[in-house]
Image (tube, rainbow, N blue to C red; front, side, top):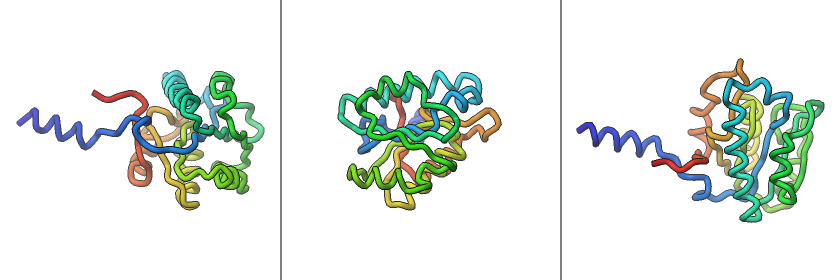
Length: 177
């Protein structure tokens, strides 16, 4: 009986590996040193490493990467942008939490014929959530991973994942056993 319960729990909490789902573009949101230094302890290394896995996958599969930065808070981490290299289709500066404010992101995605976006970054309960909500409103399908988003130390610990699980395709960066 215990084995049955363990198997049911595994099945209900199983999310596919990100390489098993369809996405046409990667959005990297607010991965700027100003915000990274405010992450909960140990989160920075984890999400940066996981985002690097996704960026490498995008490079190998010719998937465009769009970098979204909060204006006046510096540039995205060079270890991410250098790895992304020529896969970066655009770098967008935003004034508000949502990456779609101003319309530039939607125009770029439309011009690239993007329908499914994978969103990674920080300020999960604010900027990631707002960008995701706007993406869904604009008709995009969104892929998200708890392994590649995080909140600042003063933000909710669940990173808004209950909401994301209801609205998005949730994936793992590392393979589950």
